[in-house]
Length: 447
Image (cartoon, rainbow, N blue to C red; front, side, top):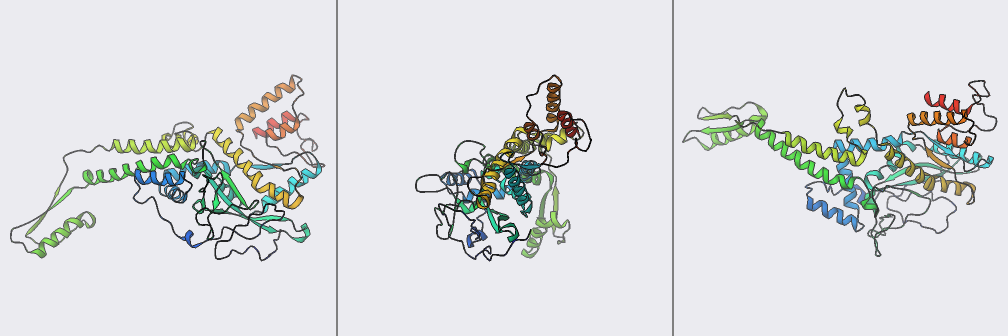
């Protein structure tokens, strides 16, 4: 499907004044979150991080100024390989789920609208990446994506479609206001660098994650993990110093009385470079000795402490510690280490589906079909395969006993099977299987 170039989607060179109309019946085609000068620089708050500095950063965020906290979260996710890995697992478990769009009702109009919505999502160039960007809220409490609207081919009556979903860095937002902490973020612009401006409706996707009650700046999982990251960095630094003391011999340079300053300086340079160069050229008036440590260092304390920090972060994000406790060859441990706890997976998928329906499907319906149209339901298929088999067998037992109160719509939704359209071929119409829908479901799930 071709998108017409309206000339309205080119980004400007400076931050745009946010347009916030009270009533909006057409999309805002102009890009709002354009790159500004302040976006090119980072304060790198993780450098020289101490408990006192971390406390100040969190107090700023609690007051609504989240810029340094957002920068810190991005840094520690990048610097700590273990933390970055388990966050990636948490997000990928949801992003890779199959999904479907269910019509608002069984009417032909709602079914056709749901089909058109599916086509619209298929057309979005970066929808899979956008899912990961929305799930960035798991670590940081919230994530924002700007909807870049476009106009479809005139043969489709010039419908509004989504060309792209652009992730916007959390440091560009603020929750600070004169009256207290805002429930939703404001965009910092050149016109409003302190309090920011409200986001226009139907233009941005705001996905929220609440690991605890309270304001959004404190809701992300990276908040408690930041302390473990800090303590772990201290432990690694101490471990490096420990290894230098007990793994590398002490180098001692000796020179005879009357040795010239030039020879002494050459000896000094040779001593400091010996561990790197493993060779040195010195005068016969000087001597270098390697003094081995007679004390055997025990590094288990460092290893145990760093492992404790990793386990704490893993439990906070994945809901279990198998990612740092799995043993090769132990039955099931490798697979368990790669999975998010099922209840967390279901919660993430349900929350993300609600965000997609509210911020993407609803405005698309409004722009193209009007305000009084049923909204299709976006649904991820997160059910566990083994649980579905048990459920299908339970339903089969009930049907065999003569129970007839199970809705076919419930069967389709429960097992993630798309409902056949009018005239569409089914397995029964092709002579495959039996007319018993429960038996068909069991075969489908087991395959």
